[in-house]
Length: 535
Image 1 (tube, rainbow, N blue to C red):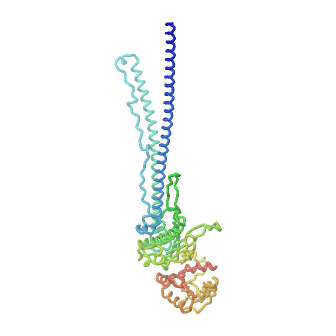
Image 2: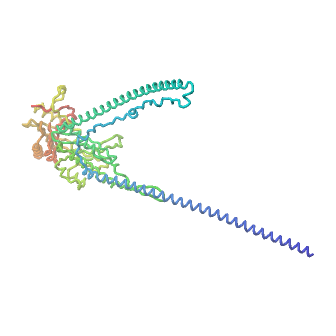
Image 3: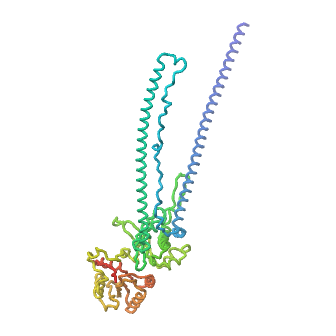
């Protein structure tokens, strides 16, 4: 019993120990699983934290990039608006006189660079072809001397052949070098010839300019306007005409379109959407800015032309500013005159343009400006550019005898009177001729039948070859007042001076020069010319 009881106790103890170990293993497994799950959770959290940090960093970098982009765009927009606002004052800081001689290209000074052709090939060196002489016991061997002699003869022949080949290559190099030098000299000669021809053209242009050739004066002031630096997007196209009799320059200048004024007033970065938005500029503000821009361009152009005129070519300047657009009704391109004025040097150069308000300044100059430039409301030019083409002939050439157009300077007073009367009849006025004046001109009274705009028109013509004086303009104005006419027109075969234009300014008077008269005759179907007769 004692032994069995001990065995049972031992079995019970063993079972108890096994149960304890199983519990320990279960607790160890549970602990391991708990730690594994915790590690997984920790790993997931670490990953999520890393992704959040990465996204946060990306968002930060994206926001910084967006803000930087917005700052750059706002700065560029601000600079663009500043350039538009200072178009006039910026021009006051620049020298606008155009020295024709600066058009000359520098004389060419090329250097002949033949490259490898200039490097001679070294000739064959004789010592490299010399076979080594026998030494020591070699000298005692039979046939050594004969063999050496043969080797020397062979080496000499090889040297001779290589020397001849070298000489042929050198001769070919020298030939190519001579050809390259000859081609280079021909190129230099052509370049010098082109430069000499350009110098001759520029010197001829200078002589014509000094001689006050109308064509040269037109070209000179076209160059002046072409050299003016405007922001990108400005058309910068001009047509220039010159009336030498009155020293009057007429400019038809292309104005920038309304779209030149930016539609946006600023840029803004929206962080939540990571996008850049624009703030629209009020339409009323854009219209004001555009009107100011047009005024600046007009004044700037006038200033550049007067400032560039050191020789006194210009006494009076007419500016017509046009904008080109597409007629939405026809789809065709149209040109609208938005601003027109006539001024003279003395009046304009007395202005302090650094302090003026451009629009108020134009009003002071009696400019006619569109009431709504953005809607392209036109104004009538004070002088149509098409009426300024010079048709005066200084000298009679061989072909002039073949020209069948009548020369107005050869007409009798009676013929000239009839011509003017018929002209205004064809223009729709009820004209009748009166007694001719003693100076060979014609006085004509016409009636414009149109309601409101019509009325009595007094027309006087001066068949002059010299500039018409201001006294004739005063006389016409007195006639208009005495006759109770609505308008007076003074036509001449020559031109008018500054004083005449100044007196007519703001009065119901219209002054038409010889080129204007020829244009009106051509419009009425009569081709004519004005050829100054030599006494």
